[in-house]
Length: 325
Image (cartoon, rainbow, N blue to C red; front, side, top):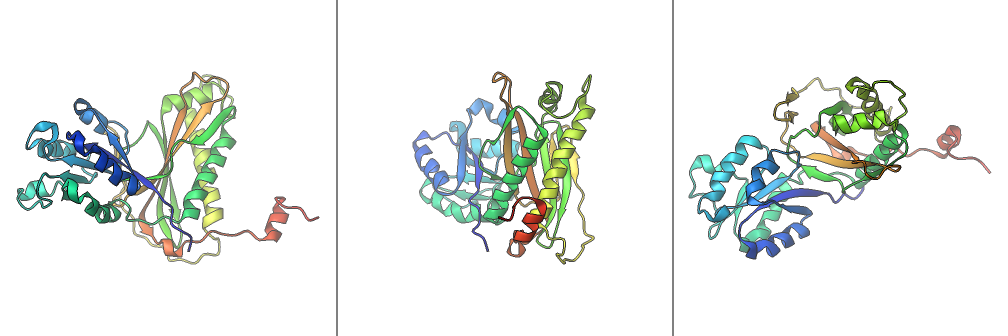
């Protein structure tokens, strides 16, 4: 089987002890984690925004208060209950002395001297799903090609490496969903973007649509076509037409809360996320269009059964991609 992709996950570090920052950063760097810091007054604003996260590292005495971290954890649980919280304690890595209700708010506890012990917990809670490298690389190639085919006079790039998220936050106002099903996966692909930014692209004729008085309804065609192109290429590259697998009837509800920009696929598993940036090559002052892509394998995930479909020489000649000398 192919080597597994080295993915990263963003971690929000909420710790008031600056003396420990270097050790926390070192732990993050050594374990494929991207540490993010927030000003104390901005923590709740950040958590209520569209920042996608894999976990939170929180100190028990946050803001210099002996119980500051416990109190903040209660607030975090109300708005981001899906995010695992790791509590840094001063002397005891156990949660046993806390009331049972408070223990349940945390995924694990640690002290700065045994922070390395968190690796096993992160591997289980954040990096629990294995993604073959050829799949991750292939998704990026397929999506870049699809975006480039639907937009013109723009530079399309991946703004960051693929990463793992545990949150369920919706980015922007426009998103598409399409099911993926094979012998090795069952779930969904989701594309997310902001309506105004996408609409600006249509109005500035950066797409192949020619419309007068473009409105939000015209975005259906653009994001729908990109979604279909990615799905078609994904199917051709990773799902064989002759593949034999059982058709399961099991489904789970997909729940959307528009007020809180929240979507749930009925699974606690982390999701594979990609971020793409479309920059206007003719006007650098324009803000880029950001497109988020998520893969949610909430119904089945069996990477040991995954394989990339290799095209034969005959097929490539027939399609015109190769010519005989």
